[in-house]
Amino acid sequence: MNYSFGLLKPDCLKRGIEKEVLTTIESVGLEIVAVKRVRLIKKEVDVIWASCLKEDFYNDLLEFSLSGDCIVFIVKGDDAITKLNDLVGHYDPERAKKGTIRHQFGISLMENVIHSTSTEEIFWKEVFLFYPISLIAKLVNSEL
Image 1 (tube, helix red, strand yellow):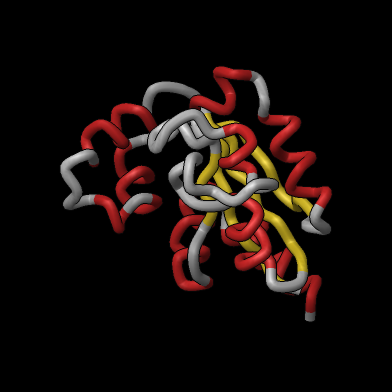
Image 2 (cartoon, rainbow, N blue to C red):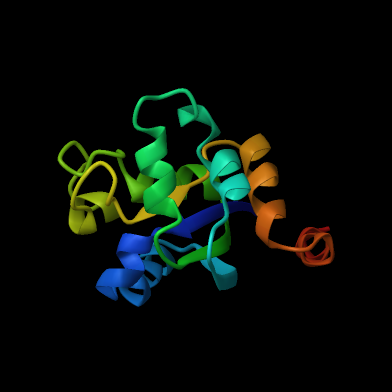
């Protein structure tokens, strides 16, 4: 078993589809072990979308990310990072494969409903933004 991190973006919550998206995640055998509603701050956005910091669209992404509440969550399962990323799909809903969350729910490049961590290294950076070390240690130790 391993873990992945995800974030439901403001467009997901504004449209009221967060329960449907989380149910879709559970339907592929991933267990949601932590979930909470948050309002992002710039520092968190800079970490989550670090790969986009120098892009021309970053200020728009930052503004969008700060525009409303989000839901952050941790999932557990075999090959969780790959499984969640495959389910999330391509960042462009028009290019996302049929059956992915972004294909089903995404509206645009910006309003594509969900973020998922891309690597184990990035998982640790993202998860510690929102969850205390004590929770993470409890999850990891329960696997030993």
